View 1 (cartoon, rainbow, N blue to C red):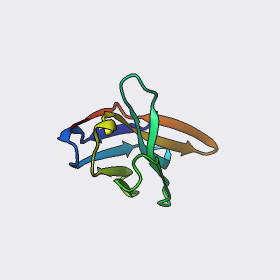
View 2 (tube, rainbow, N blue to C red):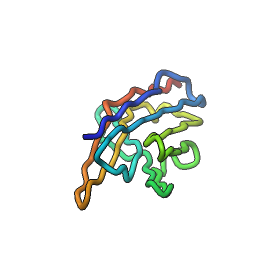
View 3 (cartoon, rainbow, N blue to C red):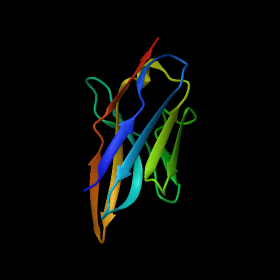
View 4 (cartoon, one colour):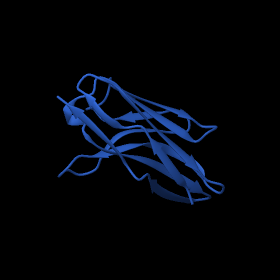
Length: 119
């Protein structure tokens, strides 16, 4: 099992910043990819950004240049610095982890944290 604890989020005005964090705890899995997805009301869940254990990143075009993901492998923790926030960034943000055990891979999701950006 992998347990995810998210923090951060909240209500900000357009142009402001927020920081999310997600800590993964496990005793039997290796954490491979970590990152964030988001889901706005009435829309499908979409990728925000992923980061591998080696530090390779994959950003959605809509957040490239504004959001920065970092990762502390020793703590299995990922941080998302969100700058220049826009009203269209309003969504529930879900932490995502790809955990491995041998040849098997498992997806884990956080409970979600609300980010609201007012105009």
